Image 1 (cartoon, rainbow, N blue to C red):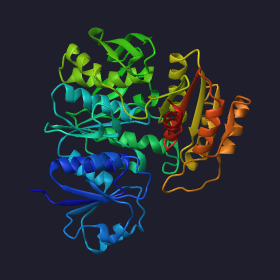
Image 2 (image 1 turned 180 degrees about the horizontal axis):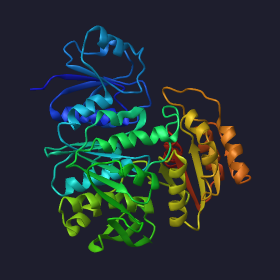
Image 3 (image 1 turned 180 degrees about the vertical axis):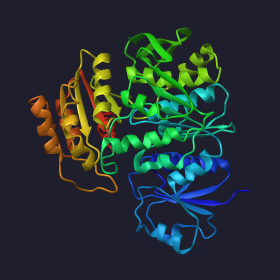
Image 4 (image 1 turned 120 degrees about the vertical axis):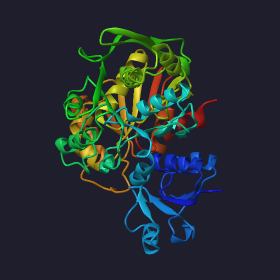
Length: 464
């Protein structure tokens, strides 16, 4: 018998869709609505969760137990108004997640970059080790065919987003802090205000809890000093408690799904812990994996067991994801939408494909981010041969701004004359690339919106 009914407004988001599936597996009847881009609708369909395509007060079941709404939902949403009028318990997404998370041994993965991959690696490793975790990840995890786990074990691992200070709702036993790099300028007025949410968060870790933090990031180190719990640092840097050594990158015969491998050794306080191999590209993913290794070491799990568990991790969607080929050109899709992420992804691409011409199709995400970080964006494309900039992908809260994509093109070309060009739409970009691309090209669709349609469109329409 079901526990009751839960209705979720804007149910097809990365977080809300994962929460919906967790609720369903906990025994709730779940339904919801979404008028957005339907990024995660397939996951909900697979789990037989009903989704209404419009917001309407009549959608909410008469016997509903509680209503959960995405923080992207507007106050004048008719379903939010109806829930208030009917005095139905109404929770924001972070409040609803916190209800479950705070009752478990909660592990929160936070930071500007690397959250999704680190959360997925940690949760999948725990799963492989038989710990039966619950988990919520902001992307589809290839090993799971979804973005959540609802295990019977004590651990609940979440990707904890700092935007709108969602971190304030969670009471973690342990935190992994990957990086701090100013973001979300529409919400945080300056870097110090942004950094403060991480300081406040690590201060909440109980004395018997744990902070795993990246020793290669000066701002992370400063934040870690504020925590009053046990701490373990990881990184390539000297002085890291969990230190990465003997890092090697290898490209096999190019069947890309298994072509990239990285091996490295980890030492704890100069004592050898193990040699590890991952099938993910980029030194940043070695760091992400090292955070997980540090956690496992703290739980007294042997290096050999951890290495075996890590080997099977297949990655997450839209993180340097191989899409296919078009007449010999390789097609890659990546979620990078912040200057440092762009630099990191393109550096990895250049290392893997030094002989290929790299063409990046960039979809700027949010007007405020593009404006606040214009100079940083403009200097992020050194490792690509050309850049196509699409119209800015606005957010639910932000449909217009003070800058446009032509401004970004001009800024890029100021540093690298002739490198960038403006093509307004995805459809026009596909048509342009169909005519212009060469068999030695690497085409990367890049951004937080629906720019993935460029590489998927090229593959689906034109690949034999």
